[in-house]
Image 1 (tube, rainbow, N blue to C red):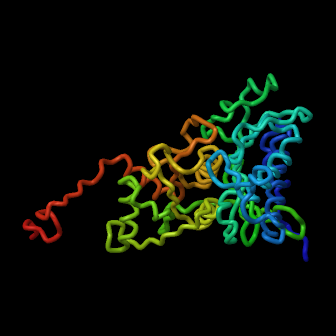
Image 2 (image 1 turned 90 degrees about the horizontal axis):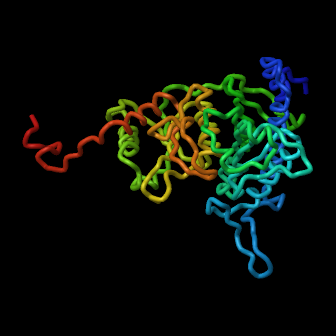
Image 3 (image 1 turned 60 degrees about the vertical axis):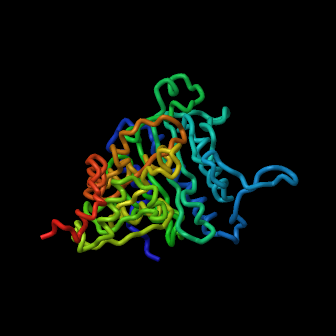
Length: 368
């Protein structure tokens, strides 16, 4: 096989570092450690049942063995747990991090005392979409890199929850790995979005998508329609208009998609456009949304914005939200810019007046 002339992930990061001559190299080394964790997870996912990693992760002792539940109240899969371990073990030792936080851990993860500490924070969802793993649907890992507060860097103290509560606009980098027919790593270091494909022969991520852009217009949307009875009026209005097709107010046909694996949804939109909606609804009034702000909404939002798309709560830009807690949930809309902005306008406008009076129905006394 001829030697590829594509950049490896390492070469790409070196080129990016040359834009900052005073950079120490810690940032690059951290991203390479994250990529190594993603490679390990890709291998575990690829083996599936052959690797004995399918099904739920069990906790308890003796006769009290039960399925483990994470801090989100969700049943943990075996691959959730092993993926979380890959992320922590492969990133704790290098001296680049002050601490970590994960969807699968109740509290902030402290760097063990035997390892040096650095100036960055790593937050991650180690295996997004893991509820689909048993049916062989594409899953992925999502990560975000933040700068640790000066008080943490200067003192070397243990990190607290408050140290991670930074708006998405403060992210230094974000990305995701997609474990599908090919394993891909999508990355933004604040200079656009690039995509790498894992070469199984070399074991290297190779640059295959040097400049990813989200089309500003689309004719695809993704939403869980089973929750339609709980949607707020702006979302109902938007979906109804899309479903009306060419004869409706939008004047064009839309396709609806729903994979139920957000990494896969984000990747499709990044490649060909679309809009993804997991909005706030009334299904559980105690929750302001279903997706995690720090581990999912912020990193995906950062990638979308860097690729020319838009990410929003429906009411405000996602990257401007000030987090209130480590595991905060939020509503999320992202994708093609013009569609997301339309959804934001619908949230800002008064709800359209719906008249049930038969005098104003289509066959009205006042119809000409």
